[in-house]
Length: 148
Image (cartoon, rainbow, N blue to C red; front, side):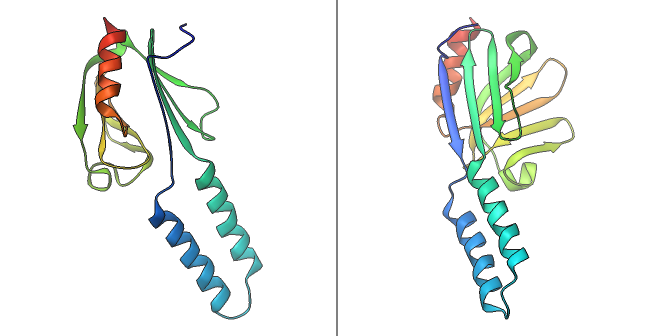
């Protein structure tokens, strides 16, 4: 296994609308009557969890590695022999997958954190994987380099 990946990207959920939504819920809990400590603790736990989430993507000599921490303790690997075709593409996260995160729809799996660009990977088993990326062109170039 190669020590230095050809491509590495770490993405985090830092979109302002997420934090505005959580802040709005907190404000509502504070304004609407007696303070609900249980509600505040739940919103705080959700905020802490969302803040800790990160998608780490790497292209190494033996495949593509994905990890959504803290949901995955170790990397998920897609070996080169499992990949039939791949391309950089634009997608619609809500329409195609129902949102962001690790999303599953029949025959497709998506790992996405933000934006609408990613790398579409068609696997030999018929299942497709979309990996969201802020640097999808670089990602594809690294795959081209490693897969040769």
